[in-house]
Length: 337
Image 1 (cartoon, rainbow, N blue to C red):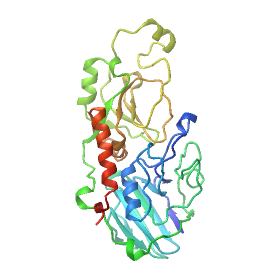
Image 2: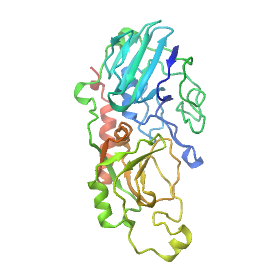
Image 3: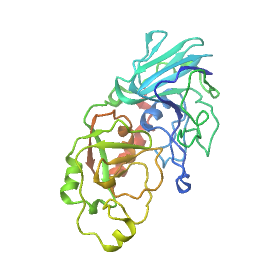
Image 4: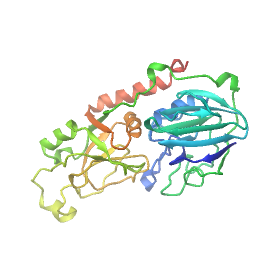
């Protein structure tokens, strides 16, 4: 059991999300940086779950801290692991390294400060956070009020139940991610994308601008969508009459609200592209200029307000290869030392 002393700016219980609900309008939710949560779970001796949305298995539930500042007290001994953004974590004032596992003894306090680099930190505990399942996942969707701990962010006084231990602290504590695999959250962030279904509706100059621009993250970004500040994009002038009649005069509108998977980049009215994130709706009626590849949504999740991001176009084949490479890496026991 862990007691929350300070819930931070926004800390929620997350796993790798719930599959199969988007047809019903239920977002997958789950970790914004799935790579970091999965590594934290591996370090803590938990099942990591599958890749974003397509994995099927949500893995163990941990905590996602947005920009940090979380304090927990252990009510019994636990093996924990931290990954993602560096929050300068301490146990009773002594430093705790990120991307590693450690023991938090009963009565000790883990304190995470504001993130020094990156936007989201992840805390895993051996056995997982044992809150009730909702549609097969423990992920929190705050807007819908379901999943996690009562469908909300953590508050002081909350107590987090922990699942049954399956390994000893001696076997798990002190493990760390191989140093050469630790992500560096440097700007400008490079995020790989494939062309979107309506990319042809933008002018050639606007498509070139989209890929050439260092976009700055709007501070109003959240787990539903991350809006990026930059130049306006324009659309091709030719527009069939039925589009105007059925979709209106705004050239960013499309007639049928299509599926909008996580990573979809919409550009309403050609202003501020929006990357749809893990809590986003499953449909959308705006032109889709590009789609972030699933393995790079973790990079999007670590962008801080006003930091720059460049979108890099790759082929569908390269996107599939990137996912396969990530999954092979996570399945290799040698990534932990």
